[in-house]
Image (cartoon, rainbow, N blue to C red):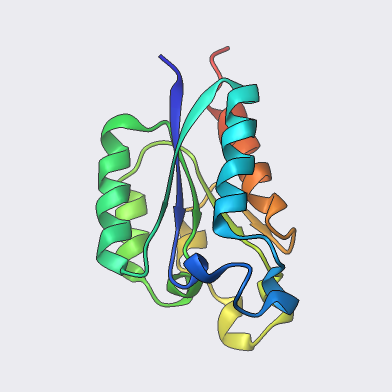
Length: 147
């Protein structure tokens, strides 16, 4: 059975490719999912790729991941800067967590410089565009490889 990795996406990422393409690029979330699925096949892992604009739904998926996933790649979007609840949920997950941001949040507004999620994340990838998802997936696969 292949290792399962959850890739979770927060609010407004459903608009990727349409919303502020000068910051987030022209790729859609479907493009990102396709690229991650292809890489997952190469790495010998499975992915569950999900997006919600609702904090509670993301928390439910993190709880679900506790039962069947070896790792989580998460782009919490704006919840990065506001959600202690997502942080608390991630603290209940035993596997590696990689936090991903498409833009370099440290070059943006000061409120984006703080991340609650980073308090739990085993790694943070920011400013690499949508390639950050593939980097995060590679890292979780590496951290969970048998050996």
